[in-house]
Length: 261
Image 1 (tube, rainbow, N blue to C red):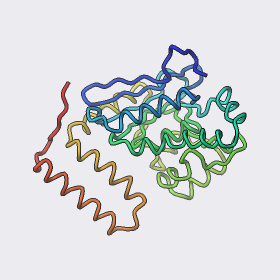
Image 2 (image 1 turned 30 degrees about the horizontal axis):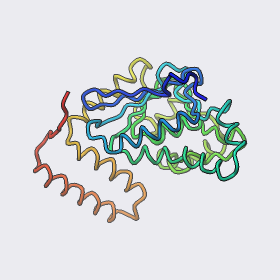
Image 3 (image 1 turned 90 degrees about the vertical axis):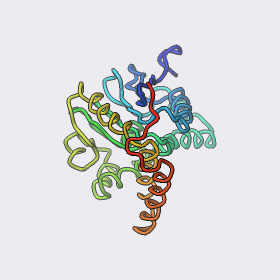
């Protein structure tokens, strides 16, 4: 259930090529219910071929924390009362949101304050850059409610972001990772005061928007593909093809953009 049928689960606006996506379920700490899943699914579909939005900044708005995960008060009960087939579809539908985030051409900069647990942790992991407030903390909370710690892409993303050794610890225990630890492990790009998160993200986004749009898109694609590539030669082949495609498309014009106010 949504808090208010007239209240959207998140808001989105664009300004000079930068999209601002703000979670908007304050009373439930931005927890995901079915309305949130549906809306986020539609949002990802719309952005997939959106040429005007070059970078997306994701934040938790005015909620006490970034995202508390699954709405256990409403949506979790609904799932457990479903048939196995429907429950599996609900699980798969939620988990594919994080694949969708990685498939977007736009880099996603997540601004995270307070708790990011379960799905909230996965939203942070699936983003490309993470800006944290000093009170940010993360938990793969799935294992704390009687499930496995490997859920919503956590077992894929976390070992690649912080190394398998520490990822095992957090996924097996559900313990919290604080902002300082996240920065030391390379999970976070920056740790700043909460009121500086959006500005910090905007500064990075503005720098990206000034670049060749295909260069930004294909850099994100190359990084994602090469995280899983067979080896150095495959990685180099992909980079070489991308660079030649971009160079001959734009005829090596530095600073080429199509951004209009």
